[in-house]
Image (cartoon, each protein chain N blue to C red):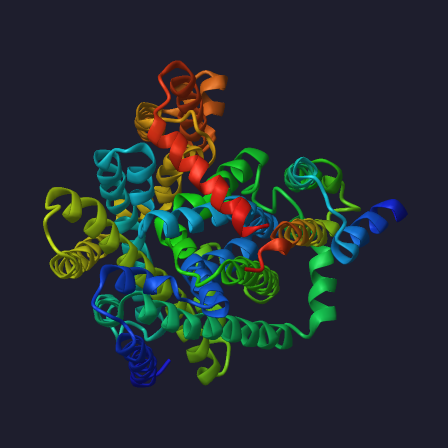
Length: 498
Length: 75
């Protein structure tokens, strides 16, 4: 691709994002609540779009297309099981929403502070969010840099592409807060869907039409089933991939924070419903594209190279539209995480360490901290290597907070001690098993130990965290504060749904 | 099969009041099917082609169930 055309297109796209963000800024007051969650005044459509764009990263158009093309339809099952996990959002979303309104909660970790009466717990979780999510942000940035440099034959170096995107994203997020993020996410979600649909249409044409594609696929049926042509989707691998993602809507703070932004219960319903529709359509488009790619580029073995190779086969303006779609997916994930992490820092670290700071001061510090988050992301992304491994693991680590969150909302018996113990045990088990996977040699292990290590460490961690929470909750004293919190939510729910 | 179609019709169109335990049970069954069906019955070569379609249908029914649960969120 012509480097100048690519550069101009990216800059133009980022300029449009900034213009939209500025419109958001004009409507944003200088309060923490307005900056981080738009004063809980976001309508259903915008909320659905920001939820979709935040959830779906560049992994969809790059990773998932490649995974389907090389390893078959198991990739579709993996994504759809994730989408089924939205049942947790349906069952708990309303509770998050009500708790947020009743207790003026802005961040997910703050909910733990309120429910378990422990600012230290909230602070610990907020800090761990940073540890687990900054590598994930770095991986997004690596994806963007590699894609741009690859498509321009390194005329735009990795570092320039990555820096351009992260600086622009930081600028508009810092400038406009949640309104800017939600509005730009809406544009980005539309670009993601439109570009992937266009790409699918063209890919079908290149492969000789829908009929020809399915005729060819029928001759190589292994790609249409599990475990796929290279045994990638064995049942254990499938469970390992799907369990952390099934809980994604409760484990990832940038997604949980979306439960606080809708302006009404109806808007919350439209947010979840809109995401379900968007997610299903986008998943089907992306996996169909993967199946067509299986026919078009059968020789490629690296899943991450399938989409870039497809892009070299199509008309340049369309390729640029798809590139912008992938950029949009990365940026929309980056901006949301950036904003969420900085709000976690403001509410669970600054406000706890310096409770006397007024709103403006706390807001200023958290905005400055956003720059620190971005600098850390840049450093991590430029070092690459092990950081990608950490990023892949982020969903497994975040999984360890799930029992404490679910219990906080539904179980009166759960208390501070059980929440702490659950998180510590979950993270420890995940950490030990992750280390064991790297250190131990499979050939020297007994078969049961090999089976244990084949399953994602996060799944064992979740199991241990859940059992620990149950055991500690029933064996220790229930605290009144927690009981009051759950009762308050249940009463508010009864009132709302009358 | 007829009974199943009628049940789904009732669920979505007539919006029969389902007890919450039944909703959860249905959802767990759908989730288990998403793991079990493709790894057992659909592994036979004659049925492999149906895996993609099965997962789509399974997810769509689960999504319909979620919309059913959210039907009363109108405030």
